[in-house]
Amino acid sequence: MPGNDFSKAKETISKIANLFKSCGYPAEVIKTYFPIDFCFEGLKFSFFLPLVIKDFQRVFLVLDYKPAGLASYERGLLALARSYFSPTPALAIVTNGEEAIKIEVGSGKTAKGALKELIPKFEELKNWEIPNISEERLEKERRLLYVYLSGG
Image (tube, rainbow, N blue to C red; front, side):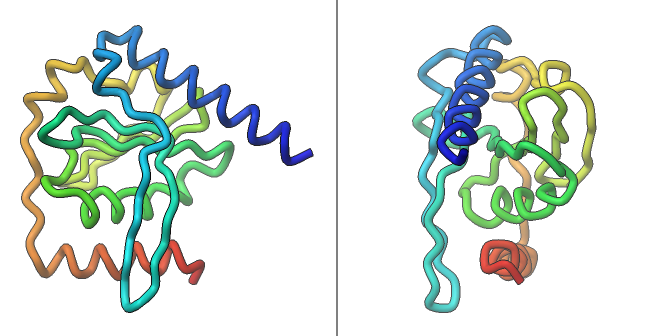
């Protein structure tokens, strides 16, 4: 029943957005179903990130929701965070709604645990240093993202 799977995903994303609100994030910085259009070597990939923390100047955090197998999505989300956004967000999180992997975008360092425990305070996140990604690294990240999105 695919409809039920989609309904459960929507419900979980709504719960995640409310979790960020309960952790002190202003409603206006919590963007759900954030559109992504990524073009590489003549191919265009369009999809939505379930949640992005963004003010009018920059994206601070990107979050992807995957019902299972979080570790297999970690590297693709890091490539997206590093290569798509400018300036680069401080953090990326992949979660199933309960457990999560938090990734520091600059270093690639990860932490695993309960989603609620891995969400930093908004003031801390706003003051997080913007990662500096070299042009050479950006090109590698774009290629890696292309591989993830194209399935191969």
